[in-house]
Amino acid sequence: MNVKILLVLLWPFAASAQGFAGLGTSTDGFATPESPAVFDFSADHEPHPDYRIEWWYLTANLQDDDGTHYGLQWTLFRTALTPDGGDGWSSPQLWMGHAAVTTPIDHYVTERLARGGIGQAGVTTAPFEAWIDDWQLSGPDFDNLNMTASGPDFAYDMDLIALGDIVFHGDDGYSVKSADGQASYYYSQPFYAIEGMLTLPDGDVHVTGNAWLDREWSSQPLSENQTGWDWFSLSLEDGKLMGFRLRQDDGSYYTSATWITLDGETTAYPDGAFQAEPISYSDVNGRQIPTQWNVRLDERGVDLDVYALNPQSWMETSVPYWEGPIIVEGSHTGVGYLEMTGYE
Image (cartoon, rainbow, N blue to C red):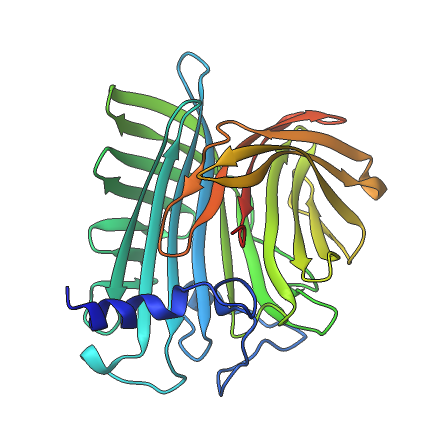
């Protein structure tokens, strides 16, 4: 590929001093989220090209027939070079896909890049289909999906069924990310049951488990002084917890959390209620990465130690980050996923 073309493709995803991956840069004519949030389904499962940044982000905690734990990721990102429209090769929309499988001893990851406007990647509804090249997340609707992806040393083919309703984070889907008021639209489907086949170097593995899909879009979700985030999705015996802390360049944090009951009722928690502190670090690709944490949400009696299934879950992609399954112990037990960005 021509080097200049490659740089054009990768530029929007490159790490920036103004927030991780440039997410703290100005909106530059793009639309911005407003409160109160108003959603339209199934239309809001589709892209929002007048916003700069968007993703369809699925993670899954799995076990095989012998009880061995695995993790799975399927992510489709969309970014826009400009707020102006265009067709075909003149489209300003760019796409990136990440797929990964994590075992207790291995972490397999691969990436796809695509231009918008030429059919190489996109999202449509009725029926739902999200794709980049031959990877797909599709089905008759958002509640019944098949998901496939492959890389040089792995593949998977999974079926998902939603056993609960979509939930909204923050103020009914308006998720504030900083004291300055930066925000995104943010909803999740955390109630998927998932089953299928992992294809790994040692052969096929039948797995079952639960999956969590995040939908988020914005044009400036971070403040200029925010350098990265630590995001947790936890599936516990009596509910689910989404919590994140956004690291700020003065050493402080901005936090947010959502408690989700098993029947889908949500309680949003403001800055300061959710706490996450590293317990121990691992050397990961020459970086010191926190791979064991204490997580607390005192108002719910949550006091957890969480640790990485595989500390070496580094995503060596255009924008490198850590993403992998976690095991939960303490006041509650369960499993979850942890994403950590902005670690140099």
